Image (tube, rainbow, N blue to C red; front, side, top):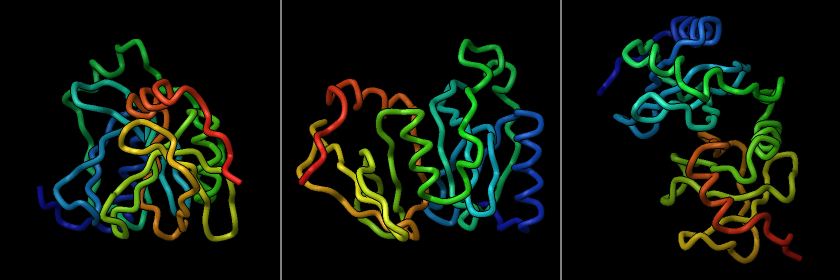
Amino acid sequence: MGHSKQSWKTIRSRLEGSKANQHPVSIARSVLIGVERHGVVQEIGDEWVILAAVRDGGYLNGYMALRLDLIRHVRAEHGLEEFLKQGPAWPPGQVVTGATNSPRSLLESGIETSGVLSVFMEKKCERTFFVGVPVKYSKKAAELVTIGTKARWEDGTFKVRYKDLTQISFGGDYEKALWATVGGPASTPT
């Protein structure tokens, strides 16, 4: 699955084509080589793109925001497009306009859409993603109360620097299942 690096112009054009025609794309990034992300573009900003995520089998599965500077290759996917568009969840719901303006606005929009969100730091951490709720924002970072591997709220907060974020996912089956399992929001730590 080693895709050659496309020009920024080609990447942008294919992302805009997905948004305009609402057709799915497959995205290869410079992190997790060999792992592609699949979705239908909903919004494109200067630094981030939001997709309605498509999981195996051609089903919508929440949303994902990807950093544009990590995208290496974009290709249109046509195999399951008809099935996807005939599904009960089509068309994807609207994302908050302007959500791609900053990592903070992405986090805030994700929480508006879903009780919890997944934040990925594939270049920085051994544990590549955390699921939680932002409870405090600063100019360069957010603090999250996270859900641990045993589906329980963890004590304290976890600081996420915006520059380390590579993907933010929300509203998907995994986030919904964790939200239902933990029984709602965590109490804010003191």
